[in-house]
Length: 252
Length: 206
Image (tube, rainbow over all chains, first blue to last red; front, top):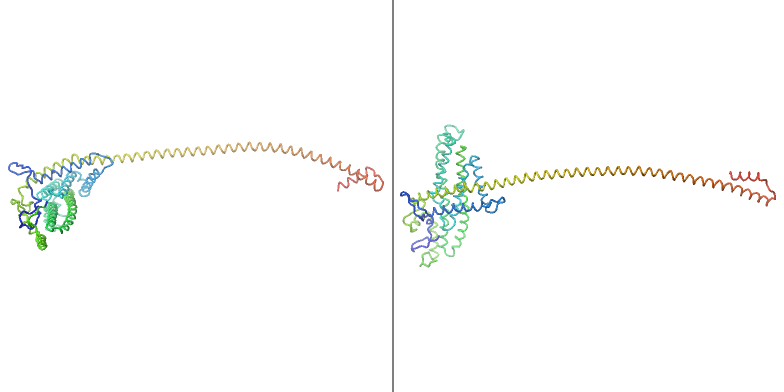
């Protein structure tokens, strides 16, 4: 975590951005494209492995009176099921597996990232943007498939005076098109900022000698805060996906 | 921790300066700090500068996400949903069975109550009949005893009346003879029997 400086001219003992470095573990090259298995891929694999393991263990007993693990698994099921039911409606049932997968993938990515020496794949804009972009495309396709060209009514509120369309349609269009950006940047920026903050405080601990207990105490608090942020951001990412699905299905 | 000749600021002033430098100019310092990180190939934010890793990140995100999706859709969700459904079924089943059993118990209780009621009224009936029978018998016996007693009383009364009459008869003759003896003693005259019995009768009549 904390790198000791190699040269005396360095001021800060920790590089807060080093944790975001991606390095190849197993080089893979397909047709000139670098698809290496990296530390990012490793933690994705660990995440889905843990998710699988957790749920297999939790639901293995299939007890009618649930134990602790099974209660947690059922709780997560209920949380996502309620999210889909409340935000999308009964038509959202078809997308429940996708939403559940999305929630688990982001939740475990965020939370595992808090473990020291781990890698937070959700702190990389390309990953969050890719997820957000796929969601954006999927939602748009679902919208057009369900409503045809009527889906375009999404960009003009029903009942507004016609002349307002000059202003409203561009605004709605821009807000719609910016969805993948806002969705992905929100998650990526939250994750990155939190992790940088942790490293900066860790640097303070090293810098300040005995007085370092103060930033150390702050570090403990921030770690708890980051855990909250990790869960919250996964929830927000998922619930916004549900809201977008709702728009595509119900047009506001 | 390795001991390097003063890699860190050692005097309080230096420390304060370092903290100020970092805290004050964090944003501007970040890129330069990253540049000093040693990985000369990647400058600035790795998220933006390491564009050569984008295909790999997206590729592995797709692979892992797809794998997870299959796990979730094929195994995890059906299992959880199945268990929860089973539990709901079991609860519903148990509830309906409990309801049925309660109905049966109520039925049994009602039957029992009814039986108890019948038995009680039958018992009361029997008791009343028995009482009536006893009453009739008692009345009959009472009447018989009364008749017997009245007969005996009558016989005794007759005997008493006879004895009294007898005693009264004796009294008259005793009184007459006393009166004769007395007159004889007093005046030396013996009255005739007829006159004496007449006088005694007159006194007794009075």
